[in-house]
Length: 339
Ligand SMILES: [Zn+2]
Image 1 (tube, rainbow, N blue to C red):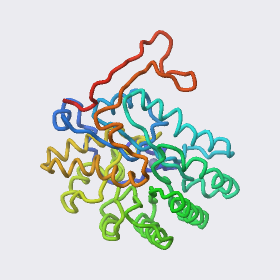
Image 2: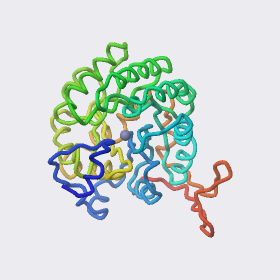
Image 3: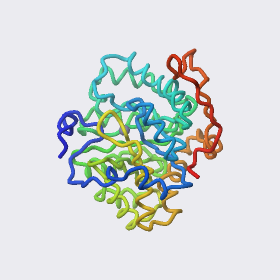
Image 4: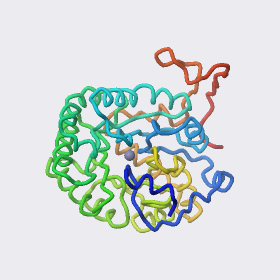
């Protein structure tokens, strides 16, 4: 196992150990770009706040036209409400602008993550401000919420946020735990049903071969996170698709501050293509199903991105551009899709 993995094990965001043999890390751009020529992608779970401009550029070049950034744990516990407020503001503000400057439509989900639900005095304050952000433009769900250690506090704030989602008529993006995943996933679904949520409005994330059958059988969306060498690898993902078909399944990269690959989606699409998965099935799991699920928010208009976003780096956000001194703005109105 990679040495770097030790540093993140103590502070898992989406990480877990598995015997996954890395596959798509071996895929170079020249190897797979031909396989995905003409495809466009929607990544419904990627933490761009933790990523660089090179990542945005590479995602754009690989055909990612839109993404969803869920609110999550930043790797270090927040000490006050103000930093939550600034983080949520950045998800609907600066990060959305930054993404637009690289030609990618940016949506987000807003929520109190499971780890920080355990700081109850702070969690109470966060609950107070969530409605201020949930009703903003471009917020396509409550998320990512759910269980980490499966503590009573996590359950309390998971339930409270399911109620917020119902009131705001927003889909829910559920983070499932790394430890006791199967049991935690079942518990997450049972509680959502207990609160009267329509399962087709709930996206259960970070599935694996042990959880997917039950998630689909109960009518939920099943999202899969493709990691370089943890959770699902993309060879495993191909096998899941072969077994279950593409209905209500979606793929994401969940790329964050740990070892992760913001190109996991296009690379997995390429591998699917190479393994003979039909184009329409690939389109559903890497684009359309996420739009259908999160589009229930009423906040997604595919016309905004299906033919590419106009990029104008001379634009400003609160007086600031993404450019540094001496840089010339890039202005391109071409299609993002690789032709
Ligand atoms: Zn996440």
